[in-house]
Amino acid sequence: MNRFLAISTQSQFWLFNTALILNILGMVLTDMWLPMVVGAIVTTYLSVDALVRLRYVIPMKKEIRDLRHELESARKEVKESYE
Image 1 (cartoon, rainbow, N blue to C red):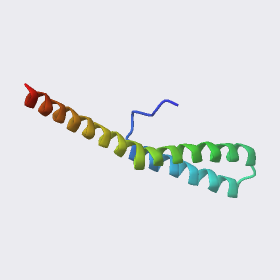
Image 2 (spheres, rainbow, N blue to C red; image 1 turned 60 degrees about the vertical axis):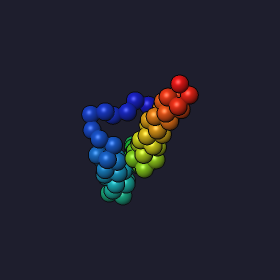
Image 3 (spheres, helix red, strand yellow; image 1 turned 180 degrees about the vertical axis):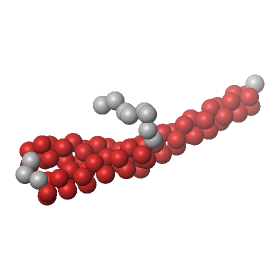
């Protein structure tokens, strides 16, 4: 699935959770069950996906980037010490 790059991950999280709440509210207040259930399933997926990216994926990418930078500096240090 393509990521929505126009808005931040935090904004996506709040947008999808708001959409999920509106879908559930729509299920309670209307008789349009099938479209609302499908919408609730889709927005639940989007909400969970945004939450996982916000809590786990983005911090993990930052940590990996920091570790790669640290590894490169350690390699340069080792290479300089053997020369």
